[in-house]
Image (cartoon, rainbow, N blue to C red; front, side, top):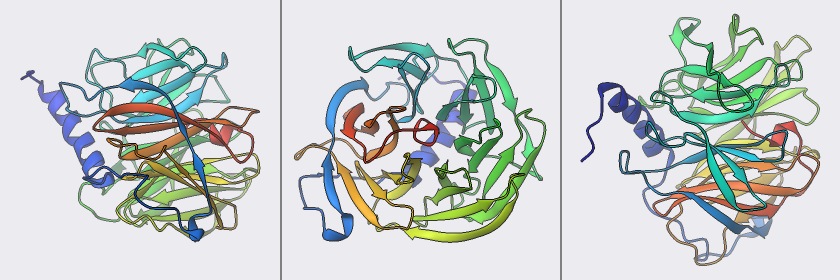
Length: 339
């Protein structure tokens, strides 16, 4: 058995909480039941490639945060990758090849997105409560934000940028205690000023702006609901309400993406599928894997090709971490490219 340092054990404990709370314990067979009328039409995703197998050091793999770079390559994070193995991968989806983009001996990265302000890749480190950034080529790791926000350290899960480069974070604080201490946090683009926009949330996970940047959608993993946070031009909250209740069964709400028409793509943790809603909460479709697929438990996130409709879904389970592709309902934008 591989010997792990105290730091590695701490990281594994944090990630283990994330996985065990968010994932079902059994694989879902998408071929077992037909989609109901309430789930809209079924969209079948097709396998592109396998990216990872369960790691010897952690016994698991979990892909997240797909985001396209300026060259059209897809970057994907592996939350559970141990030191020395790729924690961020660069994928050529056309050639079906990939290589390591970044690794270190510290981070447990749960999301990735490029900043519109400085063009760097930003990553949320769930285990250490930090936001870090990398140069577009993968080096020059910097800590963008670390420390407490209004008296409490974050457990940052997903991220979203406004057009000016200010960062919005789903803070899953309270997840391990199963208590509603989660928050939505805004960090200005300098990384110096952080404020809480919403609190007392049940493990917030997905977060994304709407198509017009008038407000934020965010999901709460342990309540299976999506809320809407309307913002003014200064990024201050003007209203908040529960927008969609997701009928997930044993599955829970994970990351969120939004296409050019304002449709929401809600990842499911514990079921290898994705629910698609319009901005008014109508279930338009359910993205499913091919009939009979086994060994995959979660479809965490999606990146829709900017200016196109080809979508790439990160799917993981005991059989490894995979990319699946499908045709989205509308074109991709910044809100459907990472986070």
